[in-house]
Length: 120
Image (cartoon, rainbow, N blue to C red; front, side, top):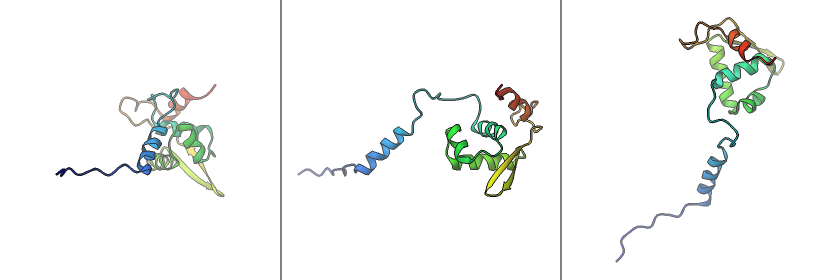
């Protein structure tokens, strides 16, 4: 008598979950890592356009809108930007004199970073 239990077959729903995870992988031409953090990327985009919508920031950085909201909350909480409600939109003002956070770069300011990255 065979007493081994059979494992349930995987449902189609589960296997599509794996497909979704694979499709969420970056495109082959997208770098695996970058020199700047997502916080820096969001800050740079907000400095370039004070009225940019979060959906556009998320698309350009390659993260979710929720992640952008959290990053903006972090930046505002630590004094790197200010939000102003204008109608139904937000306008963002960068505080360029704030020092960068890591000890290696703390001798530089946000303005220095923005000047380095600014489009010419």
